[in-house]
Length: 166
Image 1 (cartoon, one colour):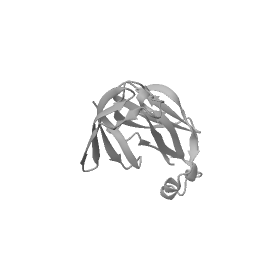
Image 2: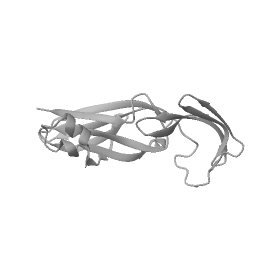
Image 3: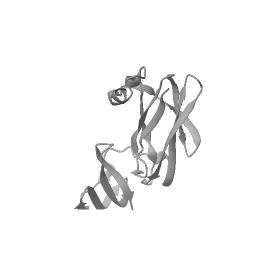
């Protein structure tokens, strides 16, 4: 009997801001009924389940429908308060059993939870510093406020993500 769940994003001990992925996979020889998401140990919502995961099918070829074991959604991490948080996913199988996977992460954010103005960022008078896989920007104006921030390359996101806002 196989029953496994893995939360892949947010990544353990990383920093997140804005809208990003919340994703992973779950398999059970008994079938998966649902995947719930808890934020700081409080039920938040059910994650859409059944996404294509050929990598999981390769790892669990004997589990029926393991190729459709993914869950994924866009999540606005900036809706959370700045600081430390935990997201847990709880997979439920057809026997009523559960498995959980969790990640602790840090949220950094701008003054607003969501900045809708497409012209909100002005970097005309900003400076930029590069070091390894990070880009530091100083004196940026975002939504009318002055900020310094740092971006870091994230493999899971396949892009740069803001990891510090000052």
